[in-house]
Amino acid sequence: MTAPATSNSVRRGLYSPPHLFHGTRPALAFRGRTGVDRGTELTLGSANAADIERIRLMRPGSAAHAADFDQRSVALKVVCRTGTSLIVQSPDAPSLAPPGWQMTVAAAARRTPPKALWLPIR
Image 1 (tube, rainbow, N blue to C red):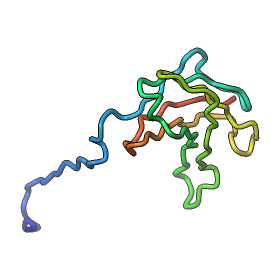
Image 2: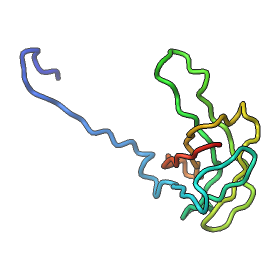
Image 3: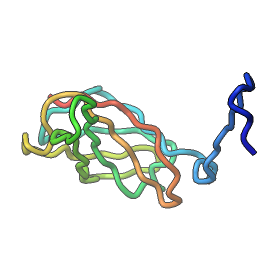
Image 4: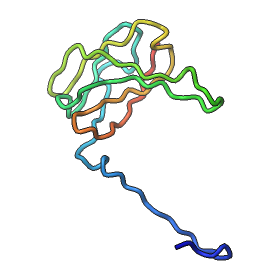
């Protein structure tokens, strides 16, 4: 039911997608240095490192154009894993990981959306 056009009422809804409530969202934290050079390893901490299936770099998009040729999603290779940390290898190709800030996100088995960690690539 829609209110008449002359009404001053304000209607709001709160959307809570069910996939946000499958348990704890995977979160990453820096262990040691807070940036990475291309082709080097980086240690990331996570309380649920054993549940993390994939780590990706997500370059933020540009709102200036209809087509964004700079946006990308690049998989990071997991070199070593413990119960609370992951060692990942950053890509060495400048075309895959250009310098700048990128979001590092983790994907867990239960498909709960992750909390992103901003990572500077040098």
